[in-house]
Amino acid sequence: MRPRISSIDSMRGLVMLFMLIDHVRERIYLHMQVADPMDIESTSIDLFFTRMLAHLCAPVFVFLTGLSAWLYSHQSSGEVRSSSNFLFKRGIFLIAMEVTLINFSWMGEYHTLWLQVMWAIGISMIVLAFMVKLPMWLIAAVGFIIVFGHNLLTPINFEPGETGFYLWTILHDRAYLISDGVLRVRASYPVLPWIGVILLGYFTGQLYNKNIESNFRVNFLVKLGLGCLALMLVLRGFNIYGETLPWEYGESTIYTFMSFFNFTKYLPSLNFLLINLGISFLLMAWFERIDSDRKAIQILKTYGAAPMFFYIVHLYTLLIVYWVLIAIFGVNQGNLFGVNEFGWVWVMSIVMSFVLYFPTKAFAKFKKQSNQTWVRYF
Image (cartoon, one colour):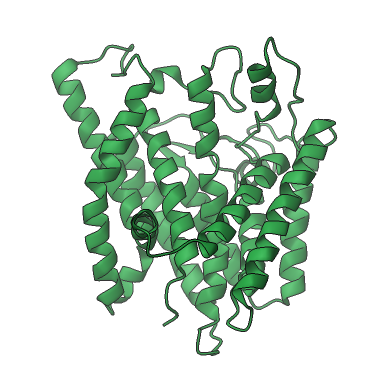
């Protein structure tokens, strides 16, 4: 088995903590929900930048899923094995988890199936399972065309009842697949751009070939990251392409800045992907350079070594905490409980990150020592 790569676990662990902050927000600050892109006129500055920080999560999760699939296929011993079967089964597993345990964790009941990030990763893994046997140049070309070309598809639209509505909703549009009845189904994460990201992640996995020196990899990641950010600045600066909502000068410098970086996540625009993947490449290079024995890095690696375990446990912990808060204080924001100061989101996030560290560390240790197949899925 290939040893875990410290920089990848550290990167994954970092964005999982960012994810935790965003999910705490969705528990106790949902009465101040943000639109997509965010409404600059109604969104506070602290909420905007915290949400922007969380934007890093999904691109990193999906990209590293593709990269990890390459690592699974190419063992450190030099042995090459097919990842198709593992990717397909893992994709089905993630979709099953999304529509069962994960959906219940959000509402504590079933009335709507929200097809969100695990759904998108699951579908992307299934697509990758069928594509891994293709030439690498073709995988890269398809991923590149999807990531850079999907914004051209924005004018295409299908109304409910029209042929192609369901497929297009899953691939490109964010809408209800079933809008009424006992159980509604909503595709919240259109999957087409994420398929492109996972394909590019798989292609980039070649950077971690045992024959490639660390210095070369780090320098390449830095150049790739800076290139993504530079391209984003040009495309966005001149409102050329890659985002449907143009930026405008605001009443102050900070609001102009917010308008400039107000990118669409659902579905992720090209500029959204360029800035977040660009930052990710720079962070991956930095994590590879920094001493992996530092305490902070060890903590991040622990979170990143058991991602699915942490994901499920933190959602159910948030649900239980929310039920306790309702029992103690009742609802105070319509039919929700919520805090009035955004700072409490950060306080609760810090407390939860500390509390959840220990069970995550224990499971990561168990995962490392176990030979049981099901453990690999977490």
